Image (tube, rainbow, N blue to C red; front, side, top):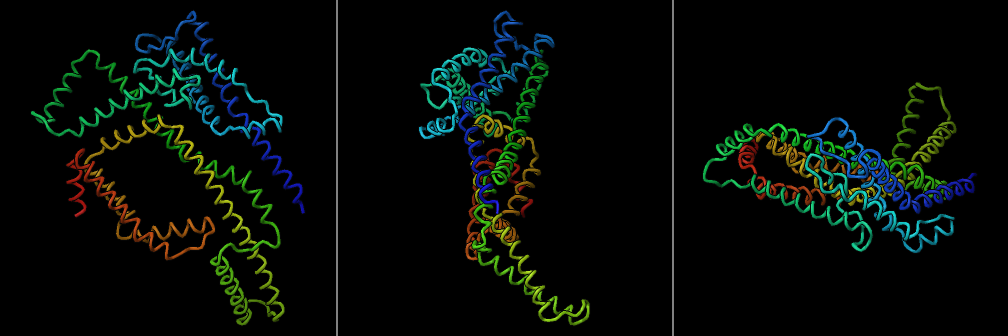
Length: 441
């Protein structure tokens, strides 16, 4: 057996992964520092050391090119500094000892301070920009973990801008939900539309609003894809390179149980019994060449060994799924923690999409979701989902737990739906609620 070589290979992979993990902060800081230096290089070569001109409304294609390059470099700075700060959270004294043990040179505090100060000096001037080039999209809501550390200038400016953005968003939502007024809203909206059409700067405002909507849509779609792709990649990578070899090493022994729960064993016994009965039936009616009792036993023994290997692999796979799913959840939570800006933009995107739907479309979507998750036939769907999850993790399917879950969770979910309709949708779109009630009746 190749257990020693396999264990050495797993150990070597884990050591390489640990070294890469220890070097994450300095690797991220160097990448952010290099992007900031590229911005400085553009300033020195093309703008005489001054700030890069990002006024896209009064300049030609040259400034559009520099604005695009600036946006790309600032995005690199944002992503790498976010990675730098969050990776430093998990580096403690034991990690520093591990770095010395495996010969990994960590970046010093003085070098970190110097590079962060240079990055702040170069990038701070691009925070306060016009709406046409919204630089807030290129920085996270929190770049540092401690207010006393370098980078606090960027953090304070971004927090103030986020507060202003949230205030404007709340003002817009409150204006939409406010249904009282001296004149009907249709007359006021018509007057506002005429004012916009007569405004000489209306075309420029339309272009700016379109660019904002386009950026909002791109960021939202990209965020949704990241929420799907990153957990799947974390699951597959951890299962193939970390969890898989470890589980295969310890589950390859002959003394390890084949089945991890009683249901798997029962399924294997039923399958083996059906195979033996089918074999005897085919032997009796002459579909196969006559077999003696000894030959039948040999066939059944071969099938039993095949089932044993199959269910041993299924048991290993279930154990791998448990730990790989933990990695996926960690990756998902980490993505949410570093994407506060994207979450705010995604909420705004959902608000615009929901408000853009007609009343009948809103009612249709609500009825569709409520019927699927809390409708009359939903218990069958929940039962299939719970059984699939239990089999995915190798857990015995507890019918008592499944029935208890079906008896409580859809009821709670239905209550939440009704409360949301009464508390929120009834104020925002009363006509949609009336349409929903008519369609539901």
